Picture 1 (cartoon, rainbow, N blue to C red):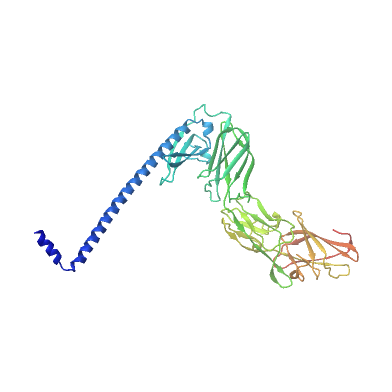
Picture 2 (picture 1 turned 90 degrees about the vertical axis):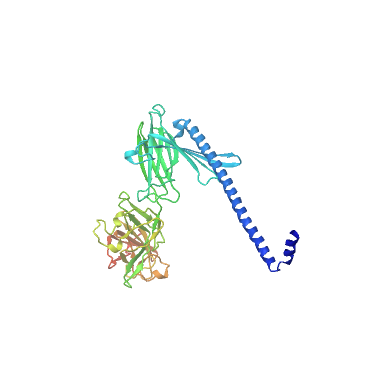
Length: 449
């Protein structure tokens, strides 16, 4: 029989050889697929087992850290933060320990006035590793005993918020005085410093890239008291700054057109800022520029009132009656953005002449704001009018300069025929946007200003 089958095989048509090869290849492919699936299953099982081992190890480390924190005195746990590393079975683990006082009414690090008291310490142990998909974190509380806190000590609770009233985290807060402390605000913007010596502290708070409502990068308060056996709550405001960059223009009498007006200062007022106006720029600074830019503006919810000058008396609409609206910008500020209003200012058309009535070029003119004693210096151009520059060709034939709203005393002087001569004019009011205030001074008095 074997001989017969062999004979038949030898006599098999040559076309069937190809089918045999295909069958072999298909069988090999199926075997490879099955083997790959088995290997994948083995790998996944091995990886899962490794992950479970790492998770169990991390959980054990977190439990050990919780036990360690519980043995620490309350005085050490306040504002406690520590980081360690451990290597187990060739795997590196990072253990982060934190502890801070929380309020038993809210269950969080609450800083609102009605919940500003501190009741217990929350301790957190977080273990992370490259072998863990998510860190392992354990939390628990430690209640201070009646004898664990010093009755002569007090608590300081800080709430850090932005312009919208949202909590700001990561703000560094330090205090020095009756004792010392340091730390940073939590995710809710709260920072609690408990069981510190009662008395006064100087507080300094800073936050990278943020500013206070006053436009400063640091909050500083000299006298903040921690009451014995009590809690003092302090609110601090930080937010991302915006910018205000107005362009100032005045009506030039010679052309009857609005012309860029070089200025030295501007006032920014916001009702949420405690009724204080912030001055940007330097009074009397030379050279003046037609576009000022304050890049550290706190983004209050309400708009800023912006006008030229460095005195509250320069306000074109002091009573909020809606007058001189072109001279006052109402500007909304958003953190990271720039507001660019155009602001009109009134003009002074001042001519300086000698005793014979001829225009004096190069005379020095001092214009002093009577309300706040800011003195600005100008020179006269080739037609005897005050200009912002005696060397700028664009200023050579202008008839006026722009000034903040106000009342001014004016004194002009120049060397004429080998001697210094001067002239004055007092109580000159500059407050008209539609036409320039016109004045002429004759240098008829011996001596200077």
